[in-house]
Image (cartoon, rainbow, N blue to C red; front, side):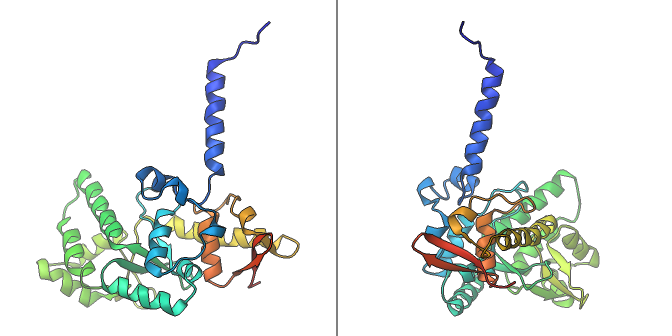
Length: 282
């Protein structure tokens, strides 16, 4: 007698298989593939895609490979440490990054991770995020939203450094009209500015909605280092490591490996069997 199958069960199993197949894909952002920013044949293993010829190429490729995370409103960002692992000459990275910053292609942000971390975001991505914030506030019928237009036009366009003083901020915003401290508070509450702890008259430019993400960044670093340290020689083949899934970070292994190599916690060693990732700092 032929065994009857439950159509709903078959559908459920098929969906589960598709999810498992998706989980096995590493190296490229799903959204990047869907949006056409990067094609399937560009999704190379990290071992074959670890270094680039210059900073601009590295930034654009890592933007395309930015991991898909639940908070879709967060623009793709690249850590400065990742650039150091992706372009062999650090001096070249610093020089080319400074040129891109001055040409208003990217912005550099100091991160609140307790370490000397900096994130790089393409300016267009950041301005789009500001527009999304304004749109959400408009839907909530909030007032004084003109300040965001002034912030984009007079502050972001002219102040390219990661921080700004209170008086300079007021001066730039005032180019578009009278500005009160309440307007500054609105920018802070939107997550676009944070006060510096050591000097309350200074602000860091900030990336909204990323508080939990920076916590995940720190936890992911510790988790990945702990994973490698448990190995006999405190090393793993990169191809094997890249298949791992992190429990405490929304960012993928590829993202963290680049970061930890660039910050000097990991080093790579080429062998006849493949590239090995080894603990450098214990």
